[in-house]
Length: 109
Image (cartoon, rainbow, N blue to C red):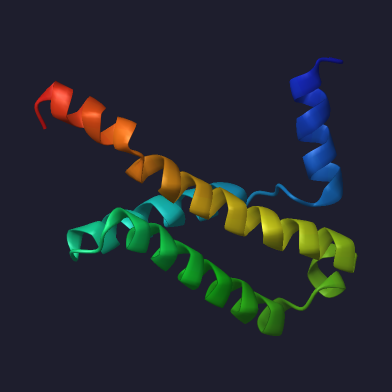
């Protein structure tokens, strides 16, 4: 197929931004933010905890896995690291948006 979405997905895979771990980063961002909220964190701090833990994880990965040893090139490693942080923080931010709270309260939860 030659549609814009397919081109975008192909470009992100070629750059190394998306891989099989992307879904885990999204799930981790949502889980960390929700746990932070359960522990009494504000919406802002829930998202900031995701950012802090995400950066700490990427630093850990850098020392354990390296860069081009795992990803092939430093550029692919950089794209992957940036996209991991963007997807986990983006998912957490999306979860705490006020519209999400309005939908939940309208449903009675």
